[in-house]
Length: 355
Image (cartoon, rainbow, N blue to C red; front, side, top):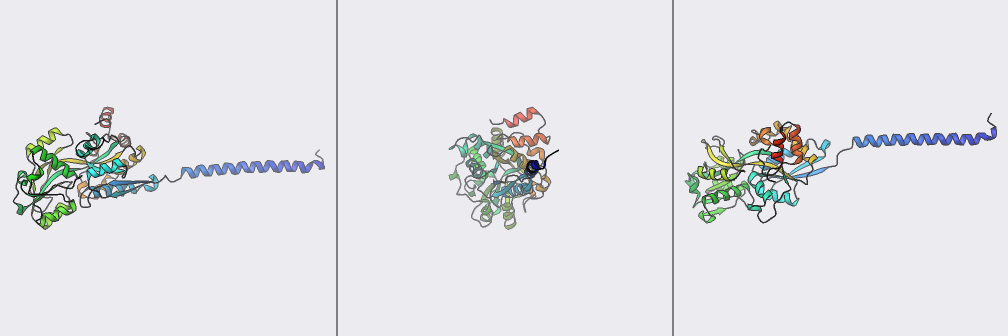
């Protein structure tokens, strides 16, 4: 029998045990709440900037379409995407290399030169950190002339007033390659202009220039504007020049611009061209790239509705079969998961291209 004199001590002991059990229970509940909170915590925000091109070209709406799709999932994935208007492919890859943007849209010839440190990138080291996410639209090299200029063939550009594009633009790169193939120099033209895409259509119709060149997906806003305001023609590139460049450089392809896209231009135009692609660097994580590629590919129908130039996009063609820059690990992960890269040999070829 417990004596009355021992009762206070026993009560204190019992109370201490109850307090300890209560603390353990509270600690357990707190840990559970922390665990539940962690499981449902929002991902750390990541802000990505996409370098595009001029407002009247295709790169800007392409970047906008990509960001619009990616931003649909920002609450789940934590990725917020925005676009920046730039001077084009060369400028985009330079800025991507310096880390001032995170993604860049660039055409295939410029990709090759940036990765290998050649041509416009000859004064800087080869950027082996560049990586491809996916292909975008085809970009034919387009020669636009005013009807009143009297120009009927590519060779008749000599002695005329021609806008060859801004330094750093895709059309400037291709025009220089064609000039080299034909042995031309800048002084072969009466005047050389370096107009941006937003200005060359108006300059053509105002009579300030006779012709301009543009490497772009079709329909292009600035060409549509020119066709609606004055009579224009699209001029084919000579077959020998096409054969020379396509046979020498893997980043060029034969292309044809169908008649009927622009007012007054009813016949097809033979030319060469490149393909635009979305580029990142190894600084962007594989998880982030995986989400970007997955978001775009699984909402491709939505992107196709955002601009006529995207209507012809096909998933299989958006997976680079001969990339000028190796594929990003995050892109490979999604392509393999989606069954778009089915064979190990195919995967190895793509991931090691241009190494």
